[in-house]
Structures are given as C-alpha cells and as structure tokens.
Length: 83
Image (cartoon, rainbow, N blue to C red; front, top):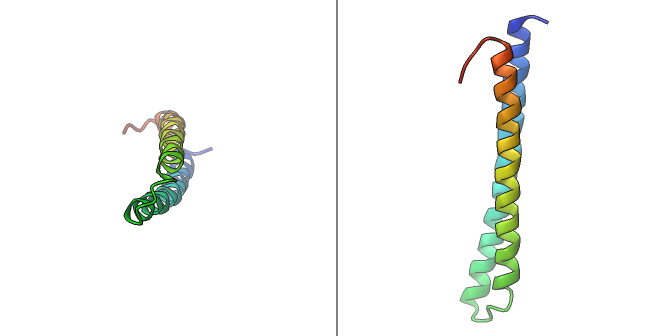
C-alpha cells in the first residue's frame, strides 16, 4: 500500500473519530441542559444521577479519544509522518 493511500485512510479515520466525538459532545450538551432545567425548576431530584451519567460519558469520551489518538498516531508514524 502506498504512503499516500495510507495517509488518506488515516485522515479519513481521523475525520470519523472527530465526527463521533462531536456526536458524543452533543449528547453531553443535552444532558447538561437537562441538569440545568432540573435545577431551574427547583426540583433538583435528578441532578445527582444525571451528573453521574455526565461524568461517565465524559470519561468514556476521554478514554475513547486517547485510544483513537494512539491508533491514528501509529498509522501516521507508519507513513513516515509526524504530528
């Protein structure tokens, strides 16, 4: 496989990773809006479970991005490029 083709595939994968991260951030935004609404309504009965879900989603996103960065960096290194 040529270096150019490998670099293009790596770039495509990077774009895919960024799109998925954007989707996960949209879910986090919706969750934070739900927490905010719950607090504004004075009920605050859902804040703790919702914030726990937010923390888990944030940690999951961080781990996923770390893993994807490692994969993409290895692919880039294999083409002779550097980030």
